[in-house]
Length: 232
Image (cartoon, rainbow, N blue to C red; front, side):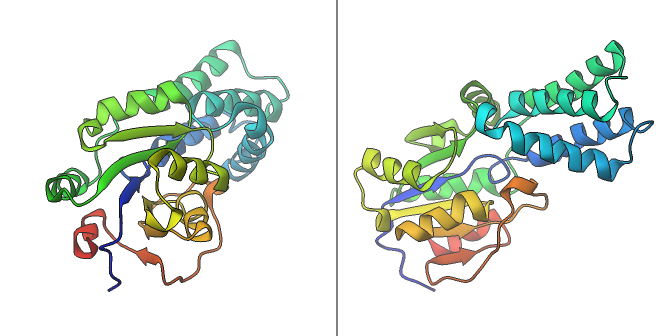
């Protein structure tokens, strides 16, 4: 076990780290596949949706609203504009449900955050990406806001955003520890900058968040959120 006494700031990801998010997106995709079944099989629908999301990302960014637009665009394109108004309404409603997901804390999250908070050894912050209002609403519904001294919501977790986070927190990158489920967004940028990371994979991963994984002396891979206590 590595020495963790010099951890000054613990930054936590939100979606699929503190609460389930991707499962709700997968349900919306399944509904899209059902509606488009007369035009394409589920595999093709998934491929077309992914292509649409990737194309739209530079303009719409991450989040539920961007996802809803991609659902509708995919439905129109795959069907050759043959979907009815009622079917488009169904697609919109499936996407809208992602805006209403309960954000119930995953097992062990609340107790673990409370334990870390009670130790008073670390400054706990939330660092997440997505659409501002959507992320704020999920955090409110989760009931976890009380654990974090600061909340940062960014459009993307780039190296520069992590550098900016360190400047705002008045720390060197080596004093930042990130806890998250995405190797691409939560882990790799922090390792590149010299920080530490706790990687807690979720059972479902969005294709755009997939990345090659590797071992690193500043990387800790956990199976459960509650295992954080063992290292802290």
